[in-house]
Length: 432
Ligand SMILES: *[C@@H]1O[C@H](CO)[C@@H](O)[C@H](O)[C@H]1NC(C)=O
Ligand SMILES: *[C@@H]1O[C@H](CO)[C@@H](O)[C@H](O)[C@H]1NC(C)=O
Ligand SMILES: *[C@@H]1O[C@H](CO)[C@@H](O)[C@H](O)[C@H]1NC(C)=O
Ligand SMILES: CC(=O)N[C@H]1CO[C@H](CO)[C@@H](O)[C@@H]1O
Image: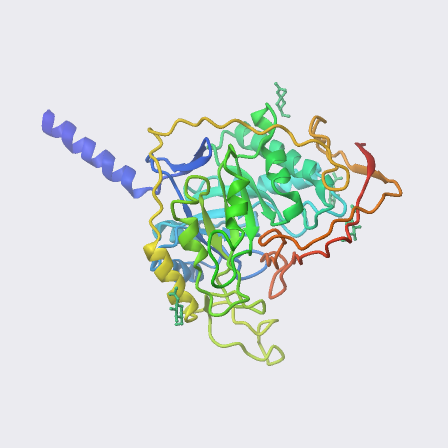
């Protein structure tokens, strides 16, 4: 009897250990279902504009190479919800790699210039969730990537939060596991930390993001925690109540890239507050951020050539010295976390930021827009806000390529804006 019990216990263990543990949120940290804190060590992966997770041979080749340097996550920006992703998801799972997935497509995304959130968008996001919730290595969903692209974009934030509310409600109504739902923000100094706080603020957890993520390109070349701006970023998240990580990072203006920021991100100054990072990006394309290539660039006008000349399939070949440099810093990075059992969350949601004319035109006490509500704004002849002096290091938005608009053309590029030329929207607004 004893032997039989023991044998079946062993069999049970074997069955459990075959599946990759799922990821969930507790307090301001991520945990795996086997009780360990999880730090994202990821790479942005969008080989083709519409869906990089349907070519199973390609996924297998890429996952295998990623595994060799300890990658545990990829970020994918767009998928097609109407096809199966079983084979690709399995290949990544076999390599121990999780997927952080944007729910939007080119047509369903929320846009800053005409912000709205309606049933068509909700259903499109829901369809992506329907396909991906089933995979244990689906780590989390983003309801938006850089919806706010400029410092005067605050009026679109309520729509991001409304999308969060509706996708959390959808997840729960379908009985899906508690997959974290968050937002990936552009690094806009004037909106920090207001945007992060707005998305997690209030007393109603049904409306709050489960995690926040930042696309930051502040650490370029030979910097350190202080000079890079990472200390400023960290000071803004010391009491943040949900997990936060870098959903894109990896300045490339100083060559070769050394990825020294990774040492800080997984080191003792940042791990109490941050949950890792995703390196931008896997494939070398026109924006020059790649870690690998599938053969040399070809003349785009030659027969059968890819539109931008960069081959997008085949055997991935690491680019040096970038690949070697990243692999070295990752090998040395040993973030130490806490066990879920030992962790007792104590942080509470921030107060909703107050309306500040010119920078934050959102009344934190106002109800979120309901599904289908649109935005109406009435700008007055606003005085120009001026400020003088150079911005301190690390506060200006840097070029921020997001692999969202497809081949070779970064969609949402941010440039530091001229100080003193701050256009403002002052006045009032209401939901219609
Ligand atoms: C929702 O907005 C999209 C544009 O983002 C539009 O194409 C669609 O028709 C709208 N749906 C409804 C129900 O209004
Ligand atoms: C924000 O500023 C940009 C210029 O930087 C301008 O084109 C846009 O219309 C402004 N948006 C709003 C809502 O004021
Ligand atoms: C919390 O938010 C949800 C979704 O907006 C809403 O249905 C619910 O009534 C709210 N709960 C409270 C206590 O306000
Ligand atoms: C941090 C690091 O490993 N840097 C290396 C990146 O690659 C260059 C060129 O091979 C080396 O000189 C650096 O030491």
